[in-house]
Length: 283
Ligand SMILES: NC(=O)c1ccc[n+]([C@@H]2O[C@H](COP(=O)([O-])OP(=O)(O)OC[C@H]3O[C@@H](n4cnc5c(N)ncnc54)[C@H](OP(=O)(O)O)[C@@H]3O)[C@@H](O)[C@H]2O)c1
Image (cartoon, rainbow, N blue to C red):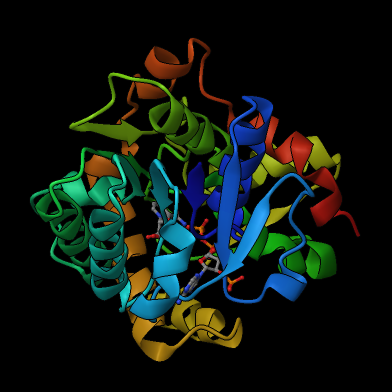
């Protein structure tokens, strides 16, 4: 049995689809089973990463855990999962981390949280794999309201390029790490096929949508306010803004061969991603 956390989110949901395609038995840990909306083949259990007692029944009979957590509580949540997994005799943990956890120069909150989470997983003594993606292509969905309303993308740090990766490719690597042998002790940094600035992503979206779009570079402050407007806490908005500023550094623009090495096919392009998500930008 494979336990998937973060199962209702972007990557966790894709991990579930990938595991079901492989025919693996899947259990999902969710906070609200009644609204989880997962496929019928998935065993759904209620649990909260912040409530250690709720993790004990979720771990029963589990061989591998996909660990996805986020936000300021991430180190504590990862430690909770690592402890529950160790108590239950789990034999592998695949943690969704952050590419920037591998950048020694990164001292902003999100990579620091992930490094602490990785440390907790390593300290559990359970064989582990760290999956460290660069920025997700799906972050562009935050631009959808502006594109639908005004054909405009407003985003900061226009000079910064990120080799954005499709969550489907992240899930493919995580799925293999969960079901195949040979991934223990590996750290997989994942990127897409090319580094792109927000303006270049806007141009690709325009081509796919078949209408002109405009990119407007905003200040970091405006971006932070917009993130808070999406319902994100000020602490998390500061962390996201600090992370986005690092797109100005070369680390995030490096293309890594990992997706192709592990899946046998090239990583999906931003154009592929945009084609698959075209309806979400339609006005
Ligand atoms: N976005 C990027 O560019 C990027 C790049 C690299 C790494 N990452 C990392 O990717 C992760 C986020 O992945 P994502 O975008 O797939 O996440 P997401 O879509 O925001 O989903 C988060 C998931 O976690 C669940 N969750 C939240 N708090 C929980 C709790 N206390 N107990 C149990 N479940 C809880 C949510 O469930 P509910 O349905 O209950 O809310 C949801 O399923 C973060 O660790 C982030 O640092 C992101």
